Amino acid sequence: MSRGIERGSIFLGEDDYLDFQKRIGVWLNKSGAKCLAWSLMPNHFHFLVLRGERPLSELMHHAMTGYAINFNLRHRRAGHLFQNRYKAIICDLEEYFLEVAPYIHLNPLRARLVQDLDGLAAYKWCGHSAAINGVEDGILNRDSLLCHFGGSDGEAVAKYMQVMRAKAEEMRLKDLSGGGLLRSLNGKRAVLKAFRARGKVLSDQRILGEGDFVAAVLRAAGEAMQKVKKSRAEVLAAVETATGIAREDILRRTRERGPASARAIYCYLCREAAGGSAVELTGELGITQSAVSKLASKGRILAERMKIVI
Image (tube, rainbow, N blue to C red; front, side, top):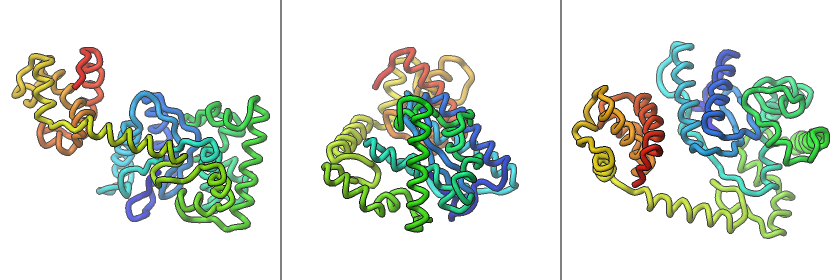
């Protein structure tokens, strides 16, 4: 999920929605990720994504950066478009999934962009229509969504609509417009009470799941951070040894195949093994952030081919 800077609009017309929709679809395919729910709103968006082989950060970075550049050109503006880096919440439990997916698809109704579920079915910038009608929208992986609601297609759509009607009625009665995902979940006391009765708790605002699951994710993240803490100098030395290209040739701008390939591997490993930012690498290599991203993508392929691991 992400919002426009100062809660400003990030979609001003159909061309904007179509542009972002296409970019997300392209990068979902490239990353191997599956989208189980999505909605685009005038000033923010929500996605429920089952990540693929490539990191979610890569998908969102490319889609958001490319879109922001085009948006600024299209509307003759300058500066940041999004408020900050997208916010991601790890989701574990089936029960939480059955809360989050309808929450995302009900966003247009919650914001009163549509009047009812019939209007929501016609709202083009949300996965609900594809879920119930089976019309491909380029983003929603319909099978991956509906398998959580039933076996056959008809049964799954009926159960999904049953949940959507119940949530829409709950919204109407309790006036749950506004507020973020976590506040909305916290506000549903009956649901959380049932979770707690089974020993299931909302343990961390970045992670939706049981206490053991949350602890395991946080522990793995801590171990990963310790594992990747390497300096760019260490990465540079490792690339120099693995490729046989001198470090000064790796850092200088050239189209020679050897140094260019080593530089691509260096960019990739800096991002993966040293937590280096694109900004740091642009300063060091004298290239744009877009060029850094392209080199890192190329470097990943080369590093895997050459089996370079540090």
